[in-house]
Image (cartoon, rainbow over all chains, first blue to last red; front, top):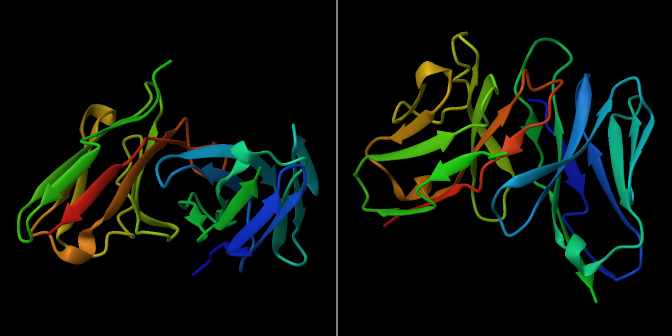
Length: 112
Length: 115
């Protein structure tokens, strides 16, 4: 089945550094979304990028999408301790109104 | 405005008992989703309601799991004859419309522990 797979599984960086997380998926999509989760509870939507878009920015977040490689990356610039969380990509299927499929996430630790 | 709420926040039950988990979506959101997340894992899709359409139950792991959405608003996820492997955080989300276009707003989850 289609699934977003994040890479790396865990990432530890110093405050102020940039963090890059990657997501790969298997089949054609309409959109790809990134979510953040703190403390294993509810997720918060970060950004949605459509299949005809290549790059999108939101504050310190930059998302790229390469549909030829079926991959996306999330870049967090000038990271802060408060960015410590798990980050998930979620993909849909190009055909039909199907539920999103979430990957297992990247656990980011930003050390002050 | 009010976000998605879930109750209870924590539930401990004995193996074999039935449990009901409740989700109150954001008012006006036509789509409602249930997910399950085991410790350190990603989200596992369970069921999806969209307006008055028949729900997408393709993610329910067994016939012990069922869900209802009354009046297009509140939803209840029921797990019958709970097993230890049912222990997880159950997350509910809602969105304005279908999942391919609209972002999902998540509740804080219900942590279920089956002893």
